[in-house]
Amino acid sequence: MATKSLKAKGNDLAVSNKQLEILNGGIFADGELPYFKDQIAKIGHFPLRPKKLEILQINVGYMCNQVCEHCHVDAGPDRKEIMTRETMQLCLEVIKNTGAHTLDLTGGAPEMNPDFRWFVEEAAKAGIKDFIVRSNLTIIRANKKYHDLPDFFKKHNVHVISSMPHYTRGKTDKQRGDGVFDKSIKALQELNERGYGLPGSDLRLDLVYNPSGAYLPGDQAAMEKDFKKALKEDFGIQFHNLFAITNLPIARFLDYLIASENYEDYMYALVEAYNPSAVANVMCTNTISISWDGWLYDCDFNQMLDLKVASKVKHIKDYNEDILNDRNIIISQHCYGCTAGAGSSCQGTVA
Ligand code: SF4
Ligand code: SF4
Image 1 (spheres, helix red, strand yellow):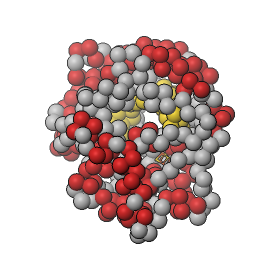
Image 2: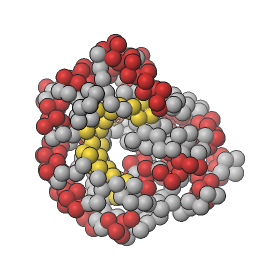
Image 3: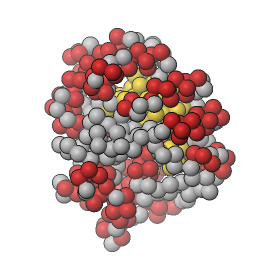
């Protein structure tokens, strides 16, 4: 279990170029495995282009109360990159005028940004159809000042999406840290008490599963059934949907793959599971990702690799949806994670 971010440890992989060197070199440069661009060219999807913008995903900072083993953000308590109110103001202008129907706030733990509540209150006024906050659940129990978050979420009709790697204590704590399971269960119960996740409730509560090792997720629908049964029987917890997400080989998961000597096998598994029918709907085709300092990316993964959008509009201060939508999406071998099996995105499978 990592206790510090790669950045705090001075790990080489904290530098995005180092990660890209690995993803573009080795078994791909040797021709053992095909480059992602060559695979998608075969089905006429290279260059990969956006469709209609539907989701604005805003990363309000990399600070987190947890240091999960597989975090693609390399988040942790030591990360100080936090969106300022000034950048939030620029985001609010965009939120008011966007054609996107979904606003997705993520982090780190977005709630740790000191201006988080102000931003949610202001953004909620824009009346965007689906307003998501990605909460790691434990933040709700981390400190007294966060205990009222379930009421705050309810007040602003926020759609809560939370990571829950497994319905057993052992698997969850192994991936996310000791004590995470018990705190997550308590937080889910509190959300249920406010009406979140109940059948027919408008207060949406979805969970995210990602594998705790170097393997691909199983069938999303079957896992949802298992999670629902176990959480209901053991803890009386209810939720709406389970999203199964593939771990992409970047940041701490890449470090884990290399350290455990699973990197090549994992890349083979992703390439073997490549599903051409997932390509048309990968997340970057309907999403723009905004970083804590206002730069624009095709997705949160490209943000962590510092691959800014290939557009003359690169920063929120110059935001123009029409210009942005007319761009080629930047891809690399990590993209195989989005097209393996039933595909993977922040909203689960795509194929
Ligand atoms: S996976 Fe989520 S909860 Fe875990 S360290 Fe990363 S941002 Fe924090
Ligand atoms: S990693 Fe990002 S750019 Fe690559 S396919 Fe997935 S969403 Fe698109």
